[in-house]
Length: 421
Image (cartoon, rainbow, N blue to C red; front, side):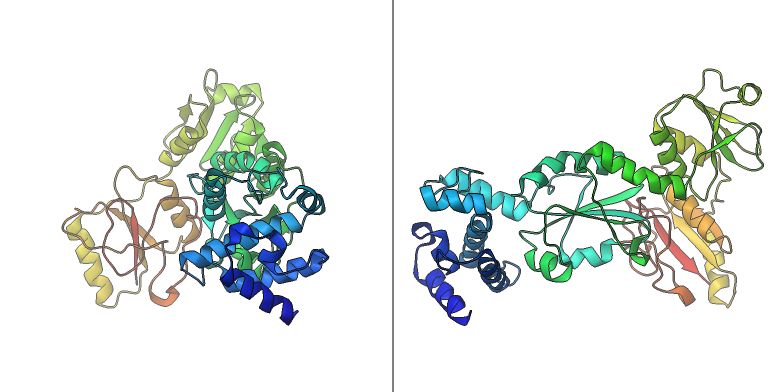
């Protein structure tokens, strides 16, 4: 094996890679087994990976050994290559490929399949560990050159778009991040879809179903049914609740709404005619029951229904700058009452705010709209607690836009959170 590695190193340094065979690129014989080819590639990949070698020549060498490996590991592609010196499989074959195909290969290798998608999070080995937090996560480990991976991509993008705010959908390009996928995650086939039902505190579930949006959605919905079930009732319940007229929304929409409102209010499907009449749901999609009377919702858009439901919740008291300074003085003087402030603008969604409030009922919650140029407030990647709970992330805001922690200065485009004791 040491001889093989030595030969391959000499070949890569001494020859023009466009003029040699795939066997020479890897430094293996034509009789080499698939296992020998795989072992040789893995060791060369670790040595030449762009993360460790920023020089452009090493990037080119790495792409070339990857191209060779993609062909030689597959028995049919290898047979065709041995017969014709080409595979005619993906446009990236050895021999008479054009500069255009090489450019496309490079682009796919570096960028992967999801780099321009606004809903799928592109992950690396460095970002993966901090990406898995609380809540539902679904991660696709793939190769951009794998036909099943390419077929899955549009379904994966749709899943990320439809379940935004409910499910964090990520993707790891295992051709570029080969060492992380193979050595750290033990990924040995593409695509590998790992689902984390309870975030960082749970083991992953390996998804083995069909790689279509419909099948992926049904897989997710079984968890939503368990975590945020939609009830059926013939009478009003106590407290704030959302009632949806039977047939007004699909089961999928109801479950998504119920999950987004989890811990804030229950969601019910209404079939009983007397309750429908009591709620005045004729011509309306839903009604939010609250202390001051019912609020009818005529829209069938999920975001609008959630917004109306959140608006019906008791508001978080807003304080002015003088009141804020007074409270801050009390805290600095030794007050033991925990206080949580939200620095927001009218454009920010109130859903993350109410999620945090529901998770920490022992806190006093207040809202303040800061003048951008006069208040210097915390801002970071996620809301965090200070004091005795320093470093603990606030739950229930993973799908929201609220960002902030104690210490720092304000980014006025995002709400911030500050905690005092």
